[in-house]
Image (cartoon, rainbow, N blue to C red; front, side, top):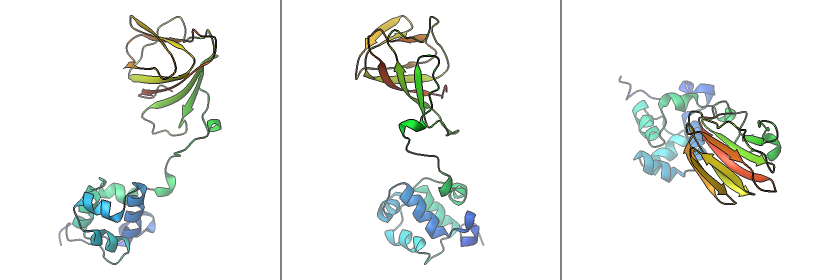
Length: 196
């Protein structure tokens, strides 16, 4: 018997879940109907339905075809832990302040060690800046001012940004941020790779 002809049994699935229940969980995680997954995978809607109901045991080849529509490997399908997903939604109180001194950098998703970027809610009090030395590091960053005013220096360029204005640049370019206004400046920023 070839791998393509081999049947996938419930015993093959990590955690004792059956293939149908696991497929349904993966499909719902993506927010797709059976019809949408069938379309993406190039199979009939009935195929998805029968697998999810446990009325058929798909061959490895058939399951691979369905998973290609996600896309997801067989290994990921069988080892994916639905109960250990990182937190998705965060209240203000769940974002720790990781800022230096008077600047407040509240980090979104701080407990997620797999983060590939940092998303920050930043608060600069009046007259505060990132220091006399220009910053420079690997990656890229961007942000949008929510309220107040922020003077941003990038290389030889300087701009005063207000609500709705933003910036985006290669972080290796020397840069500095300064609140030149008389009220707190609030912005939301992101950088990749994560710097905090």
